[in-house]
Image 1 (cartoon, helix red, strand yellow):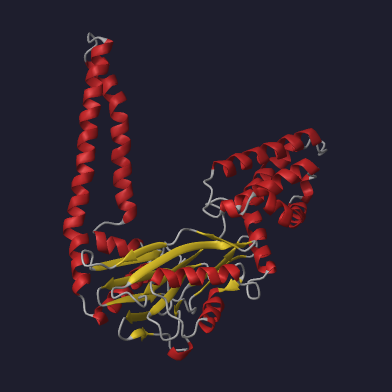
Image 2 (image 1 turned 90 degrees about the vertical axis):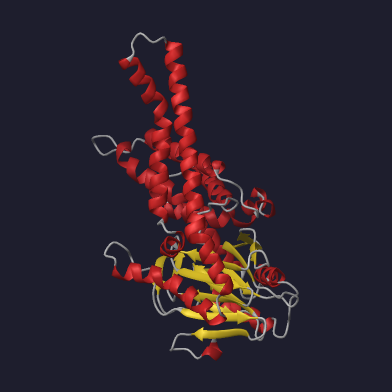
Length: 424
């Protein structure tokens, strides 16, 4: 995990990123480093920056390599709108076959297979010992039932997941034709002790390949943030998405989200990855605490009908069932209305006391102060993890900060000492 922030107003946009990054995949484990570059100038000489968060690789290829290869290929090029640049970058990594090869895509397949089937494997391991007699003889009928039940559960879970926007480009038949052999080999190695039959292997293969079509595919996704100006834009924008990998020339990518500075919305701050501390500072309340408060009162309101009914029945035993139900319903309705009023009031208070003043302040900040604020948002999370005995430090290292303006382009405000800014 990592922490990044983008702050912008009509004058400029500041981007800040810590130096911790996670290299993650299901089969190869997870490793975090805190000396990694995650913030880059996307096109040399253009007022556009790009930032990476969470996983530092796309299908086994480092994002830094991908970004710098794109920069070389687009030298001197400009785009009318920032989103045109962002989409061109996504098109570049979609179509490239020399840097991101079929072998890279196979990494994504195997990682997705592991993520989809690790739950099945754990289920079988827990139940395996019950498939033996007291004499330690395997009862194959019991094992078959165990395997079949685990597969049925996995199929149900995958089927209930929402299809990703890329699903139409990856029909099941196409995936099966390209990767069934690869996945089947993996399954035979992982489940060797369970003596799977051909049908069970085929069904597990379908589970793994179908997971690639789903939003919750289990892959360690990378976040991308592109910020700056298009050639015909005078106010900055942010474009961001998350990508799980590339399969058969198709990016497992969420739709591009775009946020623009306008005359009516002149200031904006956005945080990415681990942003709990930053939003606690901005909104006046920690997100976990907020959710706990809402959850507690929501459960209390939901239970108020039955509690009121039980209380009326015990305190007023002569009251008819219809009257008891009516009174309980009216009480529950009144409590629910007050609960909704409470939530609305708290939201209004938060907007009035914290959010709106911050947006107004950001709108009038000088360019240099945008960088200070962006860096501070990242540093809040880093500091909290650094001093907390309960948190693993997944945000840390030096914080890189860049400022992008229409007149000055991409300028480093702060850069790690071990690298020259010209190498970024």
